[in-house]
Length: 96
Image (cartoon, rainbow, N blue to C red; front, top):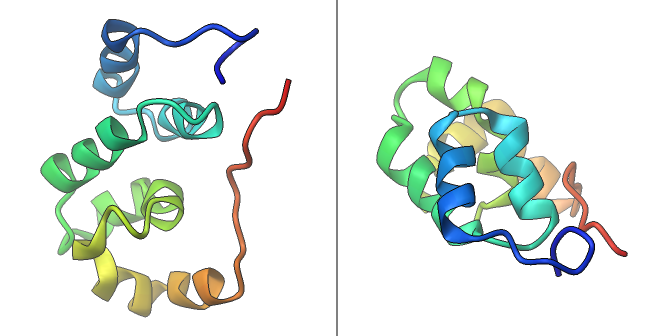
């Protein structure tokens, strides 16, 4: 997948992630590229005990729930677990 059938190269994906912008990283998930890098960012950068960090990246934490297990307490406390059980998503694959 990708944009117009093109792949996003690693350098561009890293530049997007370096912005620390939640919605830009969500676009990488939407085009089904570099999900692992986004999950690595969350697991390495975001403190699961910081409500500020978790609230800032809640969409990514929700969409990547299988890849970001260390945020389970936040999911329970914030209600994201309920959304996951009801299969609610906010980032959808971009189909060309």
